[in-house]
Image (cartoon, rainbow, N blue to C red; front, top):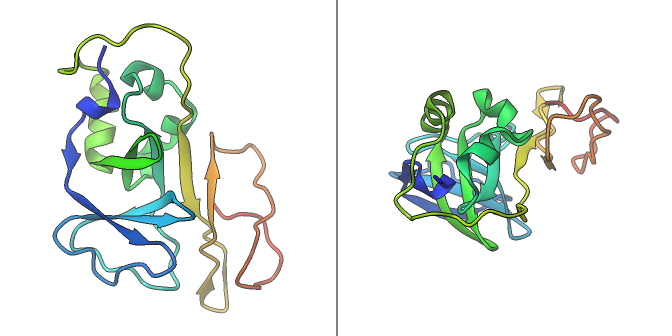
Length: 169
């Protein structure tokens, strides 16, 4: 079985989410808040401090591709910037969004890491998005994690003190 680790992993660095890099440099920047990846910025990309961060999917690196591609988180892969892979609590890799979409389109491939024993999956994939609600030129940008797109958007935590609003997908 092919795992997510078998996908095209690109070089990356970690950066704090509270202070996104103005320029990601020559490699992906995985933005981390409270020890969790909340976004990823493509190489050469400039991040505006008031903009919503690019959405990502976060999943275990050893997750089976077929199972992952069928999960709710991967159902919204069409607009994510990247797939961030975890090995335990550590970021293990980044797969660019276009490479992820191509992999989902072609289906799982045979992995080079051998056979994965069958069993109940112990990992959950999640989507990390920033609230896109905007008011008077300011974007909320509150990061939130979802297992799948919610049918009804929850109220946003709104730490910037904008008008009360639902989370903007």
